[in-house]
Image 1 (tube, helix red, strand yellow):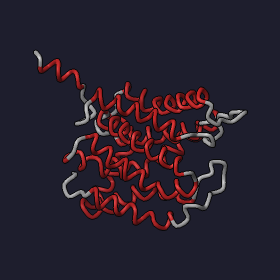
Image 2: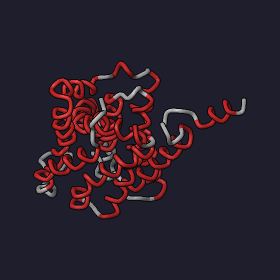
Image 3: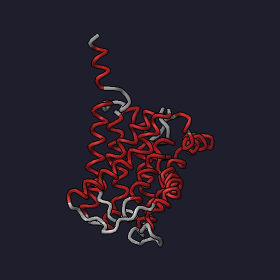
Image 4: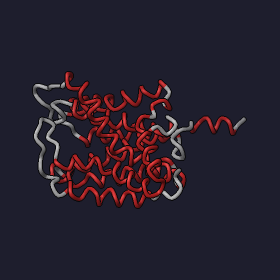
Length: 263
């Protein structure tokens, strides 16, 4: 299925397809989330992947690619715990660190609890457009040639670079650098979840969606979210995952192999 797939061609096509959206990257959309027009470029990874798979495998290949978004039957129940709870935990810890360190926080913090049931399906759909490409198309051929960690770092770096123009236009360079660090670290966690759920794109999509749910649930609709803090915490979590699971697959147990070798 992965024969003939070119992650490099995919990455280049994603950037080319994103150009019309990036031309309006500094223009905000109406609504309380303060998203730019460039937010609509989320469709580009799925579009690029579909174009390439249509050429490589035909219409049937495109149908199989899109169907991977619903491959939830691959996931063992225990993996829903990190998929659903890890990102909220990172953001809660981030809030605690900001509070203790005296970083700016709203005087009257508001958490949109009633909007969370709306955020979950909304951000799942948005994430699906991206993960169809990043994980559904690019991840497997990369992992055939490289380690899981290297794959995650490559996709994470491309993912961060793809977002860099809107980040820099709408935020400070420090904010953009923190968000880039967070983005790469979270891609390591996505690849970890993907490889431990029998390569479930649904798992990757749901975790990606929870990233956005957690960010926009941060007081007040994410207006005081600090990616420098959350990026450092996400990076620490990613380092622990790599240390325990091993960089080659992110799916084994580093010390289990040592014990087995000593028997």
